[in-house]
Image (cartoon, rainbow, N blue to C red; front, top):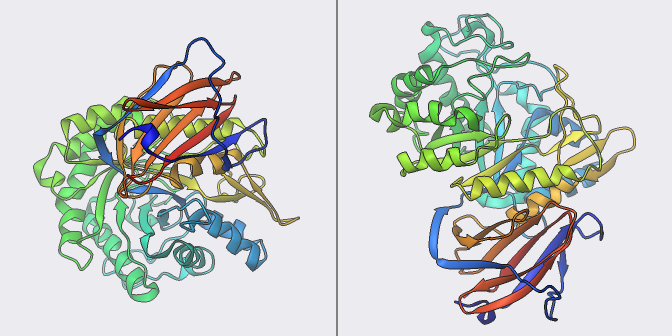
Length: 452
């Protein structure tokens, strides 16, 4: 396969020229620079298989979208999930019980001492969350995969008798809590017709937060998976639902996931580990973990800008591109953003932990703002298909980041990110032939080839 043997197309998002995921005619003239760095592709050298890309369908996202007229709301959901008209998201994460990005704090079985889970109900999800799950599925179609994560067990299962501010799972509630996951999966299938592809054990198990949180040490999470959640899920009708451990930051990925993966009995039950971007950009932590445990997978499950919404700030998108490329180039198999939509202040959030999102809604004016991060994520999700394989991509240019994939149909997708103030000219090479290229300052591009 050579570059000249393929028909190439280019899509670009750039700060200064107004392009937003826009098709661009490829340059036909010669390079003007005296030196042309070469981005060399080798489709014969392949790495991890991609599961997909997506975002979180939180109660806050659902609330923000509900402030829009129905037709406009549907447009935003389609902009994310439609496989051709939108960003082609095929992964969606939601929360079991409430999280910080909920309108208030709630649990699905809130009766103290209810070890039989007789009080379990999906009712707290029905006003806001459930309609959004169905709307996303309608827009995304049969390929949409759902992931569920708990931020905390109900207060009565916790050592601190609260869903908030950390605490731990009580020893006498471990089996009950394991059955809670299965009860959730069963109810979602029976009552809503929604199956879950995967679940994580605990959102951010090392963090005591003002909002819903629950602390596990690496060994406690290992033991809970091995002795409770794994066996209970395996014995249920939902045994095909994958378990991901960890679900926290890169700096402690190896300690937490390693504790589970290195125990044969616990490892048997887990497909892999989930990852967040806060604290660290040590992308190589994933490579180190996967080198030790090559049969496992690492899925990025959450990242956002904290500190409230900052409408129109271009660096939002650049951080996403840097992290997505860094993660993909070190073995991550899929990438899920945090809230798909928030209000113009970065909420609602029932404990005031306001953050940014790729799409913001102003409830007062019903204005919808698509931020740079929306388009930047789309340069990956829209062109790198589920089942794609990362291919070798040699990039000698300091200050420019690249990643490349071969899709199941044989087409190629190459993402080039330039976060700096200077444009770059370069050559995209695949075998003996090459393609002259140019990327503006503060821009991201995706080069796609025809199927071979």
